[in-house]
Length: 468
Image 1 (cartoon, rainbow, N blue to C red):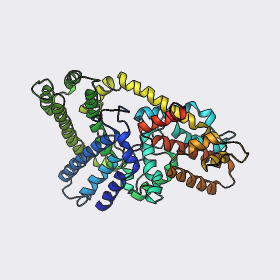
Image 2: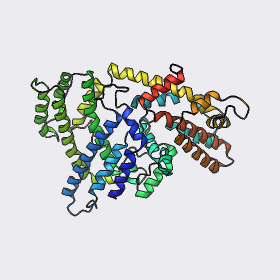
Image 3: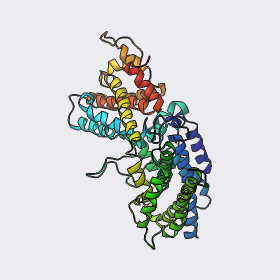
């Protein structure tokens, strides 16, 4: 099993989507300061924290499970590697400009529903449309990442299963167990409906109940929380958006919530000593205190998460336990840092300006490709195949030029699934029209979300005529 996990890591690290993370924003897009994190450096940090959490969980389980009833003996390295691999790919599906990009894409599809919808459908065919449409108006990088590793790398690996990762690695990335969100709650899915068959294979292979989460998901998402809570603050200090004084005063005031007897209260004196170092002029500004603080937080929370993983093992294996770190709980050290970031960083002028840019760029690109999304299937195929005119002898020059920019491997994925749908639905013209339209929009979206921030900007300039 350990060898399989090493193979997974190699497939991930040598893939093109992984390399493109170096030019995708963590928070600050199109950033010229190389010290500020990208999605690539963030993912590496998450993977590092993930290994710490996995090791802490193993230690805690050993202390609890002297008889090895959990069957972990001899599988420790594989356990750690699975968590690390899930961390490495947890952000692989993020579109250009991160969460701003997700919102821009969802909003664009919502605003263009009337034009994009297949006309003349009803009943079960309309339900088929609505099922897939819900994924588009609630676009999320997590299911897009799952689609990337299971669908869009097939031509690179010569494998119909994308990167052909193990079922455990894939399962460890599926954060949301339910197919649909509960009433009055935000729609969240770990995968798009186009990947239902892959998720079924994962569940069947591992003997999982579809409504449950894999145990290792809890460690992956905890690693992400721990990594970004400090990194976004560090980057904001580096960029001058916030000052060390702002940060120190907020954290010091917030420590009062940790009452005597809480999980983290014994660590408060050490934390206060670290915070005091920020005020010392005898030490290099920023670097040493921030490194100490980050290490302190990672060390304390790693032990806490490892112990909780062992204590709640039965709930975790059963798939019923929610995140290991609860920022709203009484012992939520992590919640203090997240609250500071929300109030002082994510609402800053610099970040909000990037949000405006992201919306304009992604909406502009989608607008350019909209006609290719809604035109007749035969016309679309003519443009996709590089023809000058369609079957009615009408020119498809613009569509042809736009579609020529799409990666060949994405086009191959689209064609493979359209052919599969044609064989499945046969004479059911309405169902085929719906699913082909969905696959076509997916083709455009796969290309757009795979762009780096700078390439998305360049493409926007090109399609808008601002650059030749």
